[in-house]
Length: 324
Image 1: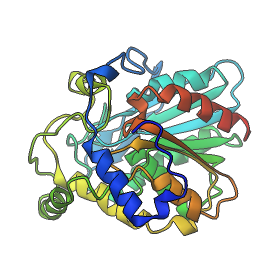
Image 2: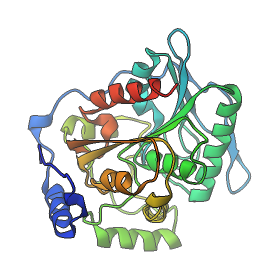
Image 3: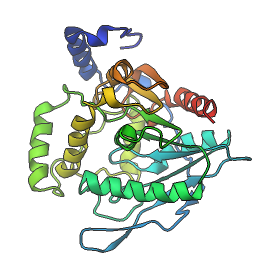
């Protein structure tokens, strides 16, 4: 897949279908084995404020928060949102690099994920998730009042960032999305996703089959790191959670022509989970006056764990600094 030039081919249905089919044929390989990006790096500040929410039974749940303070004078704030089954801790290498340029990073683990309390791996509803996100952001906006605040996220986290700014494009100084879940890869288990959504509607917190690893990263060491990470959710698939992500993905995929927020989007050419060409679609349709797309043709979905993240970090830093 390396060196594939998409150009304007993404608008050609037959070309696009062939491209997606080729993506689904790609397999992890030992030739890509190497160090896990960010391994050993952690956020220096945990639980920088007491963040609690109520579950459906009115029980208080403590959600874990993170902060990577800026070195020297703080020039901007970056709010980071994690992807499905992951946690903010896996973005510490990004936050560390940004801190060296005066950019302070903060984030939290969604209920049921990472170090947060709640039923493991369960996202009860999109509405509840966004209520938690808004509560966190309200505190961030109070603490950093008057400062430039950027938001960013990987996959599901990118979907959250997009949703936040769809109807409020000027709320933040900019949006940075890493392989955001804003358009489905229709070639990836369409029947399986249909069944998962049906089961999820009836039994939202039920565990079903074992997760398959190896779809999100080309480097086998990255996939192997997840089961060793006590804060990543690696248990059986929960259809209710998958359903919520897919449903919101379907909603936002039809709104590109209304998306006006300033954005930087990174997409992965070998993305088996979301449409690898969605960045071209968004650039083509969005009326935003400040939009940038960077496409890594041999990158896989979990960009935070791909070797290309080091390039993306530098581009993220530069993009933010030019807008403060």
